[in-house]
Length: 141
View 1: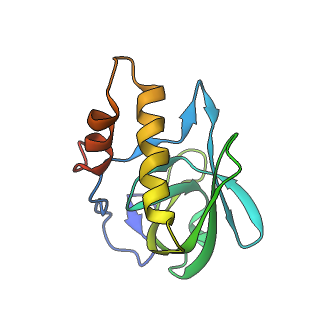
View 2: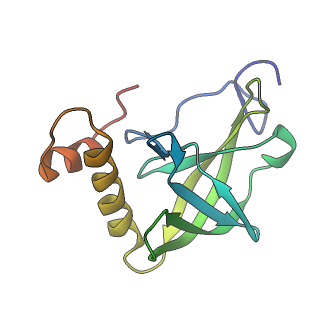
């Protein structure tokens, strides 16, 4: 695919309702996903979904069980996600996934993880309330 396309071949359109965040801290990946028995680094993460590195042939739309991990935290967030698109780039591309459901308190835990990530990654001082508003707010890009 030479242009931004989703897995079914139509033009790519941003699907995220919430702001997405780079899944790195101090230049190192800090968010990981376990899917299909493989641990994969996330490129980005939001309350709506996430992006992982991957080739177009791995981007067939389907649902899968996931386990989300934050480096240095023993807790896990589990649920079901769906592959929704592929955006090609010079290194092969990014597979876009959307959360379908969470087990237990997974969605609330994700909000807490992202709020903490925003505070830690910010170059300006943010309160927890301000960071939570950024996490829950609309996409700024």
